Image (cartoon, rainbow, N blue to C red; front, side):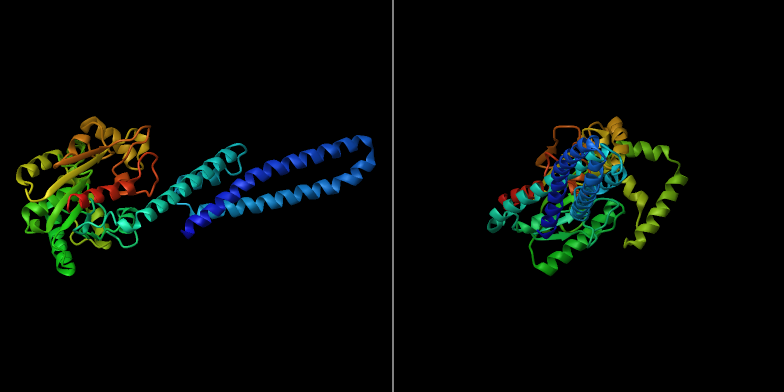
Length: 397
C-alpha cells in the first residue's frame, strides 16, 4: 500500500533523526571541548577554532531540522492512528524540552505499530486470497444504527466493509433514515431489501445490524413481507431490552426542551437526506418500557438464524466523546455497558458473543463499527467481522 510505504519512510526519517542527533551532538560536544582546551592555550586558539566549530554547529542544526521536518510532516499526512489528539499534542509540546522528546517517542511508537498491523493484515489476506472465506451463499446487508446515515465517502462501518470485500463478501447497505420510529425504519428496510433482491436476483440476505438497526430489522422481519428473503440476522450491540438511562433522561428533561432538540435535529437531518426525520420517536423506541412492549409484540421467525454480539467498556475515559460522559450514567442504571447499552440488553438469538479485553480500555459502542478507525490492542475489529461472516458461510448462509 502506497500510503503505508510513505508513512514508513517518515517513521524511518524520525528514527534516523533521533540517532543522528545523539551522534552529532556528541561530535559537537567533543569538538567544543577541544576548542575549550585551546582557549586556555592562548588567543590564537580562539581565532583558529571558533569559526569552524560554529559552522559545524549550524550545519548540524540545518541538517537535523530538514530530517525532522520531512519525517514529521510525512507521518502527519499519512498516519491514520496518530489521530487529532497526538497531532495536536505534538504541536503543543514541540517547543517544550523533554516533553517534545516524549511526544516524539509516542508518535514513532504509534506509527510503528500501525505499520506492523497493516503489513500483518496484508500478509494474512494474501495467504487466504483464493479461499474467499467471506464469500457467503447470500450477500451481506449492513444496517446502521440511529443518528447516522449511509454516506458514500464516510462509511458508517469504517474499514470493515473493505476488509470483508477483500475476503470475498458481497456488501449492501440499508440506506434508511437516521432517525425514525422502529416500525417506520422497518418499512424502509423492507423496501430496500426488495430492491436488492430484484436487482441482484439473490434468494436471501444475511443481515448485520448495529444498535437500533437490530430492532429495526427484527420489526421488518415480523411486520412486513421480507422474512422469506432473510437467511440470518446478526445484531451488534443492539438494545433489545432498551436503555433504562434513556427512560430517566426523558423523564427529567422538560417536554419543551425535548422538542427544541427534536426540531434542530430534524432540520439538520433533512438537509443531509432524511425524509421526514423523527428524532423523538427514535429515542423513545429505545427506552426500557418501549422495548419491553416491543418484545411482547415482535416475535422471531423460526426459519431465520438469529445471533447477537455485545461489548463492554472497562473505564469511562476509554470511550471517545460522548461515550466517556454517558458511560457512568448507563452503568448506574444498566450496569456494565459499552457507553450506551447495558450488558443485559445485548443478548438475542441462538448464539451470543460478549466481547471484552484486558486492561483499562475495553470496547465501546462505536468501536464495534470501527467508528474512529482505531487499532485497539487486543481487539481487531476488522478480523472479528471477517470471522463472523466466515462462520455464517460455514453454517450454509
